[in-house]
Amino acid sequence: MTDPELEGIARQSLNMMKRDAECGKLNFFIGACAYEGEPLHRMRKIEQQLIDRCGERWLNDERMKSRAFHTMRLIFSLLPPAAIVFGTAANMFRTTKKFDQLPAEEQEQMLDGGHDRHHTAVKRGLMTIEDVLQATAQTPQRVCISQWIRGHTQPEPPHFLDQKDFAGRLKMFGPKVKLSDQMLAQKKGWEVQ
Image (tube, rainbow, N blue to C red):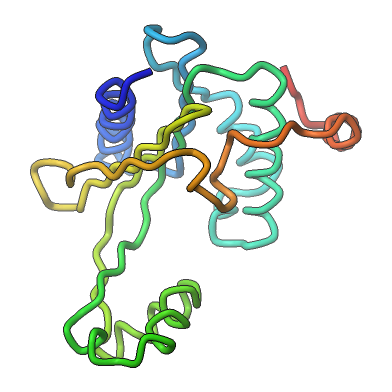
């Protein structure tokens, strides 16, 4: 899948998320393309199962977030699609000139400190915050992160990177999931079809 195709999938997801947000129904978005060239399919059953199992606000609970993303990786490892998209409303933090004046070590600690530290930085004038819709589309080789700042008429330019350079809970492609993890998910009542 080419970068423009991956960007198209991310933008299509943003449009669906924007529509949901305008109707007051946006929680999160999961989509996939089973085969290259196939249209994006919204995975509403998986979205609903995550809400049923983890609660409406699971994205605000670090433990639940880890479990939910682990489960998604497990599901997608069983029948890997050509591309996966995860999207949600988020905060986008940008550094300010005041931030640039901090020592490099303090800058790094702040950037790696998580949202609590980022919100503190906003209060100190070191960062700004904007509400965005964010879609992360990925294939086994590439990742496209596309953001739409609320109130803007067009999405921001996308950011591309190789899958090998992408890390964190949202990473859907990588090492194979162990059989014991699959059995554990089934034992806990997760549908994996």
